Length: 483
Image (cartoon, rainbow, N blue to C red; front, top):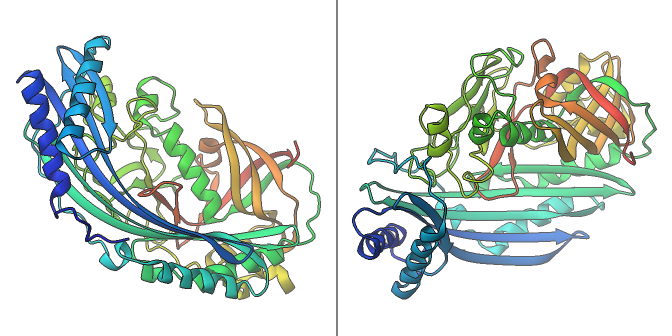
């Protein structure tokens, strides 16, 4: 991967300006156009059976155009950046606009507005090569000490520019790195993952030790009857809560359509919950797909729902302003906050420091291999104050049953343990759950929030969540993993 490609430093902004000029030339001065040109360089090193099996890198350019002509709106995209390709894109989108229904809800273009420069980004991460990622994989594998391992290490660089017919333009750059790995001991799995904006901050050995310790601690699980149990959710499990709250709750389109639980001004969560979407807390782009500046947005403030994410269209529907959350799918699925941070007990309402992914098994009050069930001292502290309940490492295959109350069904994975008198006593077979995520975090339901958070990678470049462990009063387990 290299940021020193054949493109000039301002190539994205130059292409965006060319597209805006083409629209004016072909459709007349009355046409409104907005265009985003983004370049993503992604490199991925995958491993399985404790050996690297895939090392790929690619650079892709995406040109996204939206036009509003004669009361009709159309959108299109492509990867051509030469004159003929750009003209073909504009002609295709203008032709589509002639056949689309009228768009009376068109919210207009973002006017010229100041966009802050990109936050500091790390060129060494953007230019990282396969040897550097392979070294992290080797460290992960060696630290697992003979267990079978699998996972990936990725690095990414993004450069983007925006321009529209109203004279507004912006540009930004960002870099990131992430690692996600699994260790297997017989039929028991343990995982560890971490997102950073500097590759140098990834510790493959620490992640490998953590994954292996959790796999060994998950061996020989026992069956446990379904029911409501107090729980300590580790950061990976909390990350699933944040992702679903984001997609289905704090989504401005769903809110405008009354398909969201969110009720701004209402104390819907425990006072321990402060939730912030903060794309600029790490290396992130300073504007969205409509050119609106991005900023920190407090969604929940000390338990009270404060806001939902909006693009220009959903904001106009409810009579407010865009929060800078327009994305590729916001016109269809809705604008979604993609950089959620759940404030820790030590830093409520302010940026928390992403916790180390190192294993601190000595903090556990259990003996033997069960010590590895607990990833860090913060989780151990929460476990020590739970009389009887379950320690949950991760949630997966989560599906929405009722969007309005956000009732979710899913499974535990990568480690589930019984806690008795503040001690991890047995590994437990995975359980299915059915739970309303807002209800699980409702007033009185959050007993403790950890003091340190982990930043976890999403499946897509540029998205992450930052979560501490949580001790909750109740979680509804409805059956075994098979049903």
